[in-house]
Length: 552
Image 1 (spheres, rainbow, N blue to C red):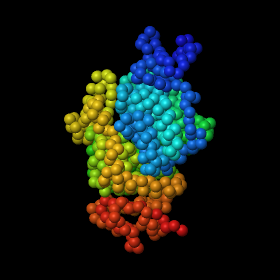
Image 2: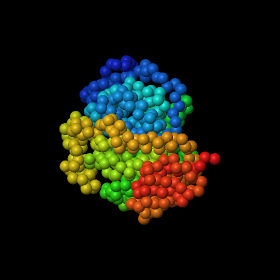
Image 3: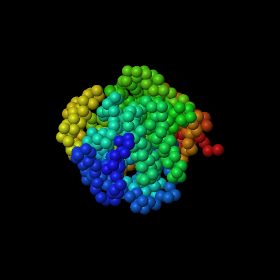
Image 4: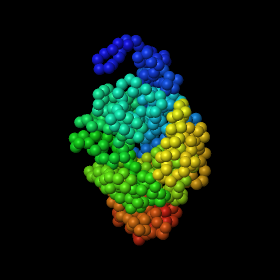
């Protein structure tokens, strides 16, 4: 290859699709292409090019629904079906259509080491995990989803490099030791060579949206970006995605995961924000979880239960400048001026289940009635709701943390690290399943016989009913904020937003609640004992109801 200025090397040779190629640096071993789009032999093997023009798409007229205000469904391709492939997942899309969700969110499918894993230990950023079905498999999945009216969100990882099979640092200064993250050196966003690193990330994001027809990207843990430049990477990425959206003629969106409670991610760039569409909200999950389970270990120490739940439903975040005991400093900033549906709310997700020692779902931690209440508040509350695979029927299979590293030293380090991580939650080392064990991965597969069984079928129908209601309502205007009426001692609340009221009784006694005078149509009830009459709404213990304005 010929050397150019700025550290670049080029070749006039063209490698056709399907032909293996690799790079050798300074006489070293052959390494895969950092921008290689297929890794058919695993993350340590040679790369192949992909001809994106060869795939026959059928979604020319597809226009995705808005991310904000939709109903999202997160799934892990490897455990969503017994086969663990894109093709098998296509066979289950009918279930999602019947459920009523609008967006399917895939956990990372960028190439990672081994056969199975969560996908956040990315090695080949531009390649699709071959055991799932490779590039063509992902394209077939997206095409099939669009054909069924489902938008696709792809979870992508740009905040760190995977610990095995990622050779980016051999090709340039992709990371820096000046700043540290939980995964090692931070991504280089503001030192020598940073322009090329930022271009690598932006080009990768645009590739998924352009060449794979993905509708939105969920950006993993953006709080781990250390960007001190005048133009933050997230702002630059949002600008590029807007340009691509205009070029393609279809809406494209960016959703962030961040634990900073920083509204700058969502605010318009004209007002100093980054201009992203939405972001995940752990505050809602933690407040709901502590209310339902009474767990207060680890990071749950910051959440008092029912009082935090009331606050988050009204304000969007519990921490908007308050002191955090878990962190040891004042955390967050107010969301004033932003609609709460810009936040993605969830009772469960891959992190909050899988980062438990035994991977228990909420269905294994609370009584069945509490699952109905959690669904009503999440789906019909003020946030854009997200469900995690199997949640809709109360799946009894866990979702554990699993890996398939080839390095024995790395495998042992991960085992040790998991045991240490759970010490703050009071779990003993022998309670933490071995992430490398085949049975850990196998236990996490969904059991598709469960939705047909009692009591799972009734919970599934409850989710379908709530989602149908949610999708029949108009989106809330930005200035519309929920009003929450509650009793902290007796643990009941009514959330009024956008012409609907969600009432929940989490106490141990039956309650007679007043609802807004104009709201007199009971459209969903989690318990047969719920009544709406002239005196008010009668709620048995641990129950929920949705009330809407009368038709005029």
